[in-house]
Image (cartoon, rainbow, N blue to C red; front, side):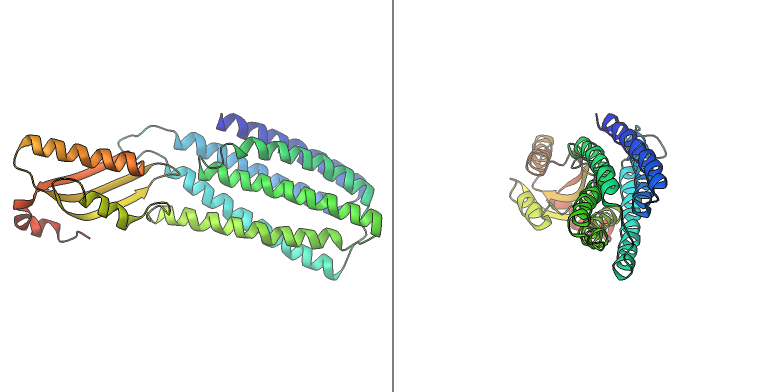
Length: 292
């Protein structure tokens, strides 16, 4: 469903881009042509998102033992970076136009903006349903949202030009929207970099996790505890745990309790535990000089 919605969004943006270019050249509107160029770049971003979704779903192989989930993060980083660059460019152009306003045909501008807004809202709605499932789709959603917001801004600006002849309205509204979207783009860039640095997911409290593990019956100590994610949802945990184990039954039951807690309380499905009897921990210290 995600890939199908991405395809629909790409098709909508291609149509909007072509129509804006035709209308923009026909009436000589730089604003509409600029928006068409911006939509064209967003089509490229959505195509990259579609590629990212397909690659990240590939199965694990001997060269990529964690699979290809990181592809979605890399694509999201690339998309959000391009988005930020386009926002900076639009902001720069907006400042120039504020300083040197250009005549705008309010009627044609309003008509084209209404068509673009309708198309972009449909594309944004299609992507919104899956924006929280994947950083990759979220970056495409932000591109589409940016298009919709700018189209809405153009509508407001066109009305201000038609009613009050405020030629600066287009640039002023574009600048405000650029600042708002820059915050979202920066947030996504920081999030993707955090994942690539194998940082702890922001929704997880490591201190609480360790305390919860220590409350499990039989567990004596927890060390070398790591949690990270390969993509938007896949959480991975590794840990060294010493427990009061005297038999195979103790070992199995303790390990099961650890897995049950980590999976049910923290929704971590990829779990690797090195479980050792507490009585041999001292003898194994030299094997764990890297432990944190």
